[in-house]
Image (cartoon, rainbow, N blue to C red; front, side):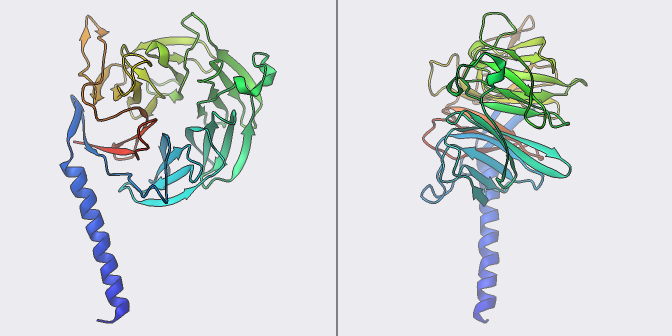
Length: 341
């Protein structure tokens, strides 16, 4: 056998061994969750060489149209890491986002775009899928509620089909800003306060169409709940999640998924889990958490039961129903994968 053929065959063999190793890891890990939403855990899925591809906080993840899993980290050596579903690194880019926090995917005209929030630079960016900057949003001075850019600490975005987008100021003044596709402010609502329509730690926001209409589901993390609003900012529903300091809501099919950063409150470190709600916003499974229990229709307080996470910060659900979990302040661990069983 000549050298070229030998190297080619060796490459095929190495690839086959890697695939076999991936499948073995996904079929042999422990299983977590409840009811019909149970998952096998693979903690080695996203692991890379930290010298070459370091992470700091693994903040959020999405899946693009190629099926790749895109991770956002606030490590400026590579703000973006792009994996295939087997956990192999395909691409990496980004050095300019020291406060990279929120990552949202938007599809329009056959193209894909990313919206990135930066809590250090107090800005929001729209980029192409490979990182070319298209739009920058500074603090919304025109609202009259911000004295300077430091008061604006955006954590998340969500985008309408027409290109309009919403920004959640989850670490700042707690307002939700509505912009047109060119970045012109159209409306704002929420803000810090004591009424049900006010928000406290409005960490995440997403469009919710599970019941036929289009609404906004927004995190109120300090108060252990999600709140559902109309597109113009009127409160519709409060989804109580006692014991769960939830991060952003992630809709996939009829289910809502969320990382629970801490439990029962933000003063309790190392106590996170992942929660899953059905179409009726009833909790059906907790990965690493206690089994959901309802008494007289009221959800009882939830908590971490199995210490498989430290501080889960986001979930991504892929086209096969597998869940990827990114963690904040968790010893710089790479994302874990959970395959449904």
